[in-house]
Image (spheres, rainbow, N blue to C red):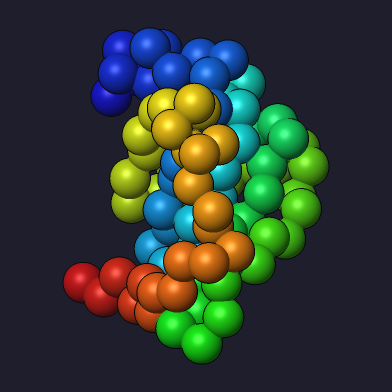
Length: 96
């Protein structure tokens, strides 16, 4: 897993957590337990009644046991999206 994360070092990533949060930021560091350090991070809060809301988080640490997915964001395509117009239900919590 750490080899996979190395390809995202200093790039914009999208992280989905077990409680259904979507956090976007620049991956600055990680360890063997997939604890993540994100810089310039923002939580994207989805709603089926309003567009995506943004909650600035700044420098943010996510515990590895809370991470569901990590993926690189194509910043050009992401900038083209009008997220304030996108309406979607929030992700449900992951239940094992």
